[in-house]
Image 1 (cartoon, rainbow, N blue to C red):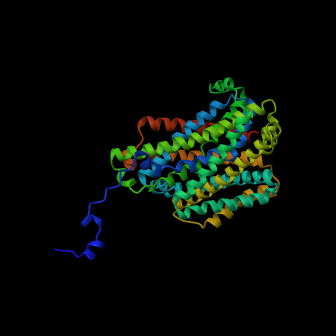
Image 2: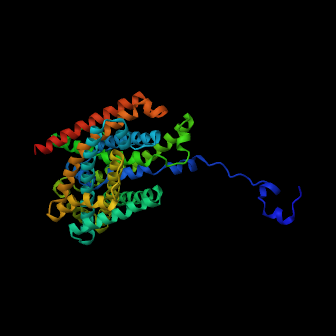
Image 3: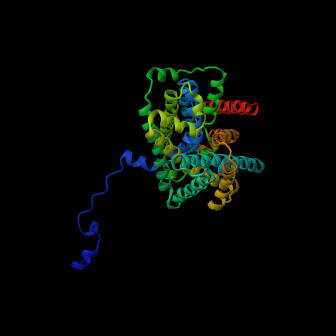
Length: 432
């Protein structure tokens, strides 16, 4: 068969000329990059406005003594977030959906009710935190600031319509703003290396420090991000299902997921530690100033200048915006998973916004509202942690992804510790 010059010109070069050189195989870094991101969304919950008050109070009251609690809490968070990410990778479904498929219907409905209460409490903390930040920065009245925070969070959540990557990039960017704000302030406050080393040794400074340690540790694991993280990992890479069927594929995916968790939770842990160190350096002996977000803002301005107080307010604003959008997403995930129903995001935002606006309109103390929201969140921890451990330890569900025995035991110890400390914290609040 002979081809004219015209016919030969329109044929692919692979037929009439030298074959094109195939693209080089993706390097390990290029294969790893698309799998990173979900843990950074989850990490926002570990630096939400509720953590601001707790960490500053701990540092102001007891110096570096409770630094080891933050480190321990962060290690626990890494384990739990790794498990929930693995559940999504192994099953292709989020935690709420797996619960619906594996548990009786009455249990599923009960889990959904408490998950909705957790979502509302989460939104209250984030909206209040954002409102306080807008007040500190621009003098915006708290109720108006709450509405602005809700609107901005709604806009951020709309980034999901373009895929998971834009939303993850926005949230990661806000997380970096939080980290940069406290990094700047930490440079100004300085660090006592002797106190830092001493704070890594497990110890307490009386009954009050034990209560505060329970608050720091018990409020670390936010139940709503356990649901969210498991919903972000399924199907985020084209060959995840095929790769997950082989030992080498599972090893690669688990390595990527663990690096994602290590980087994201590591950043969140550094931010929390920075809060406590700054408070220990600046507010020890004057703990009363660190009992409210407004007091911390004013104290930073007095001791380090306007730049430090501005950095604190900007970090708080970024925390409120990012964590509020993640909280709203969590509400969507739990309803879709437990009930197989979807509510328009705007309607859901109006429902969860109401309690926060009520607190702000009635003139309630924002810091007190943040603390009580953490108490409500503590109710939801067992209902997320226990099913997560049960599901990830089942070989019939997880296949080759199933937990090792040591992982299940470690997870059970962590769950028991967190649940016990939350119960202790809750009892303390009830008894005054």
